[in-house]
Length: 316
Ligand code: NAP
Image (cartoon, rainbow, N blue to C red; front, side, top):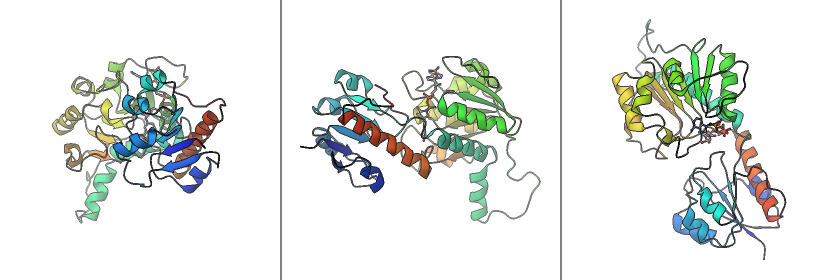
């Protein structure tokens, strides 16, 4: 019997073809809807490999009910949807897709930063609604990006790629990590100082117990009234209620959000009604090239594991 690979979302034929014919591929055939929990549990119970999406909860219950499971390969660099302790306890390898999405996600981060600073979505919506009656001296004026200070919290692969882009815009680059890194052009900063000094605070840490709620009322209170918060990391890193208040009260100037505590974010979410919030639907890595490269990494990891070879991009 061939080992079973369960793919939790419909993926393009060429991505699946990369698995070859040594495995039996089973797949949730919907592109838009995540696999229901009961079906996921049933499929996991027989699978040797799970090719998972960031929207799947791969928790202890699932891992313990999957006796044949050897590898979970997540189509994302983040893996906060997977219980790593449970995977370790059960000898299951977990892999992600670093590097392949770094530049694409940095592009989106910078696009969101520019869009937020210059109010692109607000201006575009107004034009389409017929609200553009005349050119006005201060109509839709935003914040300068060129020459401003960017503060990157989470200076890893994507953070560094954003910093490079920022340099091209003549920005002063501050960053904060738990571990200081060596850079010629980018300045390490204490967390609070970064919040106080930055015109753009960009979040690019993983979502962990340490970073959950990292930006709340206190941190937003330290930011400049003219500052923008850009979150392309994970929604739960920001306290959304505190953010809503800061945006309404003028505590900060604007926010650009690619990620939300609950995804898909409900359309009646209060943040979506604020004009100074620019939103995108978790599309950080969504370039055709990056997504295909990510899928290639998943397929390679699954095949290496099944073929008892060294598995790349392990997170455990
Ligand atoms: P990475 O290379 O691991 O970088 C993460 C950085 O965060 C590291 O430099 C790490 O440095 C820092 N960090 C971790 N915990 C921290 C803490 N408590 N306080 C301050 N800094 C902390 O990861 P990456 O590839 O750049 O990806 C970063 C994250 O972006 C992913 O985990 C994912 O959640 C998110 N992401 C989102 C999208 C999207 O579509 N929106 C796409 C890709 C990635 P230290 O360990 O020294 O602290």
